Length: 276
Image 1 (tube, rainbow, N blue to C red):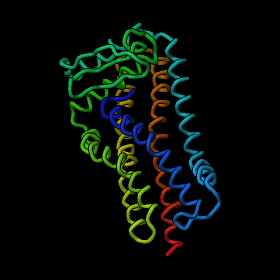
Image 2: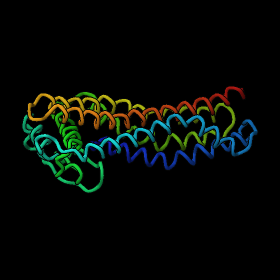
Image 3: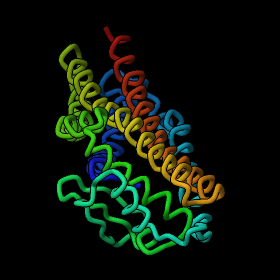
Image 4: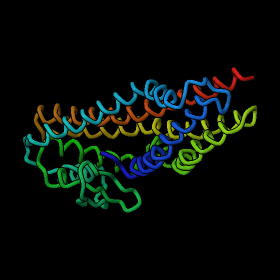
């Protein structure tokens, strides 16, 4: 249930998280060891305080992942009333919106479904492409919804596309600036931390813009399932549960980023002010 733009930012986020956890722990250790006027609670305190601060977001993220996988697994075992495959459902929606030029192709992996606006192709995972399940119909219709968004030049999706390069830069450079800023006392160090937080905040901005894009694509998909007259009411209800669960993963990602930003602000800028 991830279109090409979201896949790009997922790659960025994964790369960031690979940097961010060590950076956070190193920085927290520097503070707690008194390198920059910290609390002198010892290196372990930095790890513990970070975990406590991020625990709600972590639990939300784990719950969202569990929910989407469990819901899709459940409705992937129930066939839709029309015995229509995911690929056929996507084709129906595309043709109804005069998008016959957009291709539909299978792709390996699980929940790797996405729309590629550069190649004009919807790629559906093996568990969706040939499946007649309710879950497959929901996922395929969602991706077709993204294709319709691009064709109609839906404003939020254009904005999301435009800010990807800046968000990519911010996710990579922001944590490094925060770390370097913690090595310097005084205004210079705090300035680096401040601008590092600003740059990292661009990731949260991207995720915020992503929410209306994903919700709108799901609403488009559900409207077709409900109003086309081709599916039973149970098909609609099941697809809605699948897409609602998927939407929570985007909400969880945003909450995680916001909590990370707040941690940086409270933990580091707060300490800097007390040292003035």
